[in-house]
Length: 361
Image (cartoon, rainbow, N blue to C red; front, side, top):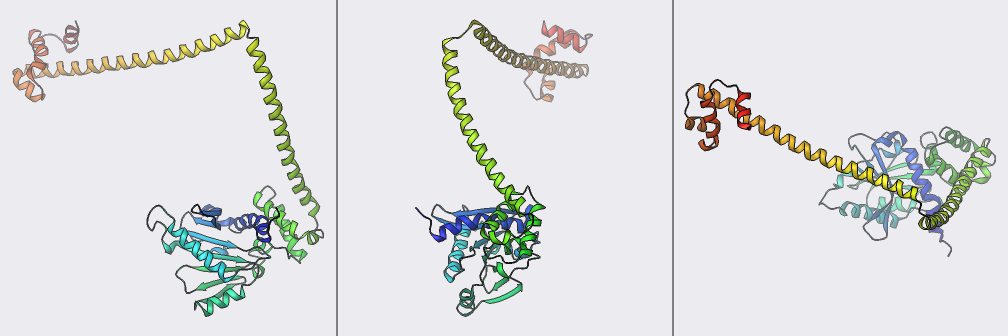
């Protein structure tokens, strides 16, 4: 079944936009989390891109994110699509739904949300609607960046065609209408400065595919195209090899398993027996060690308590204190101290260790 134009555009452009927007905000990347096609509930509703600031009090450096708060929702329109009035209300509704689709009441405050619309074309009809029907005010803060004033939620419209090439080279170039070889050369130079970055690779591949004729005129293009083609070839080759290797391994494993099952040798049996013996010995040793440690700990604890009791009773007997007084001071019953008390009285010249040995016997 053939894709509709809208489906094809989404497949073609949206992954590149998601990579592109991360390039644009690379200087703020430590403080931003990027989420592609954030699902709303279990229904087929999704936000194009969700950007969450990790530290909301740290301002975003990039010009495209000056309005950003904690939760920032982006709607992207591909180069051949347009931003309509209904798109505005759809995304506004999605934003409200995102705010409400939480486990705890008001866990996403309305004050922490922003909306950004990204379109290559200037949305004339939408701008007029916002001015005349909503009584909003539109402020152009710099080329391609329009702030919408009048709503509780901060809103901006980014017109990529008008963006500054100096500040927003990649997002401005995410189009199928590039005409300037100078811009193409800048893209190539910037890409070559980040050859191992998959984000740059994803975007430039999309831009080259959409502007083939222009890039054929750019120096160094052959090298980039060959890199991209080689990368795809290597990936497909690896996948094919992995499949074949897995198939062969599965077959050989099955064959060897049958052979081993039929021809178990004495050597294998001895080896397995040795391994099992080692495992059992290790387990038994560990268990015995734990038991002995526990017993010794109990014995040492009992000895320490008894030695302390003998020492205390010896001191108190030297002060001629009766058993009832000693029991009160030690907060215990006289009958629990009687045997030690009598032992101390009957052996006045013995040391604590000697008395302990006598109790042990």
